[in-house]
Length: 399
Image 1 (cartoon, rainbow, N blue to C red):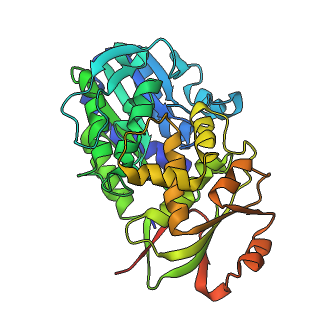
Image 2 (tube, rainbow, N blue to C red):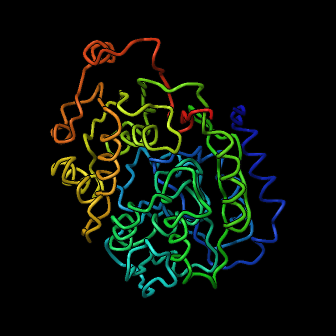
């Protein structure tokens, strides 16, 4: 693993990347900078302040848009670092709303075979009006898109509820190539680019950050969106998969605080570990998530949809996945289906959270401490591992 860049070094690296391609920012066209929400944290002051200063110096009309997708709005406390990065610069800050005041672009065309039919495109008006868009992204393994970041900032982060729900429908979930770490042949990733196709007359750039385990950034790329994303994916692929010499009987996964606010986010650690191609966990092995989950399943529209789907039970969702029938879903429910698939392969338990009623229907036991879980689940010390940041260190079999 590379050493994370220190604050001053990160600022210098961002300035260096911007200066290498300063011609991309030359004119004063209306610009929208799309940034991720609190679930994909960035050191905003060090990472984005140089960009904001550059745009202000060029007198470029700028709006910063938080691409929430269907997540809840960021709180004042969560927005504080971003506001600090903007400071007194003449830059507007808004948060995306997936349910109102969107611009319709018709249906997406030339979609992969497993993509949903009649995929309507509705995008945030700040994105629709901008002549230049900068997608700021954290590029790390993603359950469906292969890696997060890239054009997903627009196609999910700034899309309407119907668009997001269709993208997370059951048809793409059934495609085995909609999976962790795969980009080139991934139909989910391909469809993301089709959703953004109506913006092809705009200039879409990418400032893509590759995070370091435990926080911070160890690489970044600025360019037109596709080459910036591709380079970041190459860097992420070389960093985030850790080879194990033999299969494991259990994993203890303390979830980083930023992902531990609700089970919707925390459960990603379990599904990544279980469903990654070449998982180091043997079938039937145990995953013990440790996350405080003060919001329980979660408070956003997507998280509530997940909770409703989970309450129907693991076996019902698995049957729908395997049946091949057309099943109507809404954004957020996909997490329940993927979790059901992981629970079919591995036993999952949760430590340190308040009682969450929906877990019982999935056979997910809860414990107060890992010690209690290890004793109750009969986990032998030498046959498992503790990984403190699974999102950036996914164990796979070395062969």
